[in-house]
Image (cartoon, rainbow, N blue to C red; front, side, top):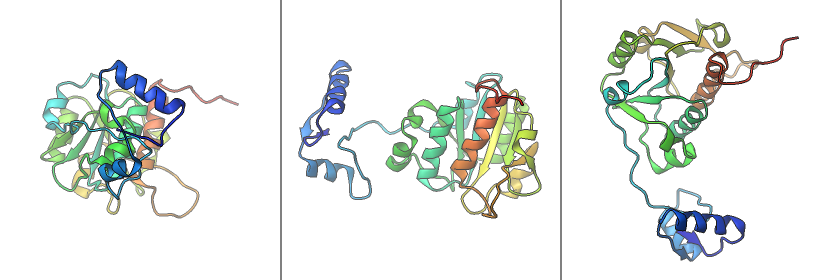
Length: 225
């Protein structure tokens, strides 16, 4: 659905793509699009109806992981926009899968999918009945499990991010739970200049994935003086 107020090259491009891929579309009054999107979501003149993003059992994804995969495990991230932002970073840095627990986790809601900006379609999200057991299975498969922590941890650039890695990040308020932290091989922190407590979880995950990808050869190395 495209708002009749949407014109110019952007509208023509969207119409051409929809026609090329045989996706039916219609141009509607702006108020009709607002009713479809709902009051809680600010649209940009375009809306689409699509199937809900699947969230398969974690076990189904484990068998599909490459030997040197990089994955993210979220422990208690309940804000859909944080989940979406993590998926966006995960897609940008080549993460193979994101795992979340059955409970105390944000759903793949419209808000999460919109924030992911395409990441929800590129990175599979698996639900784990027991997050601790999932980490045990990852370690059995040769993954090193690295937790993001604000205390009692070395700076993230001092860690070795090569090989199969599972990055664990905690929820917005409590961080990684002690029971999950005890199953990790090591913890790393992101040093900050100001005493702000901790970074937003999606920001922290993005920074850690950037360092991991740099070490794994996926980003240009910084120049040496």
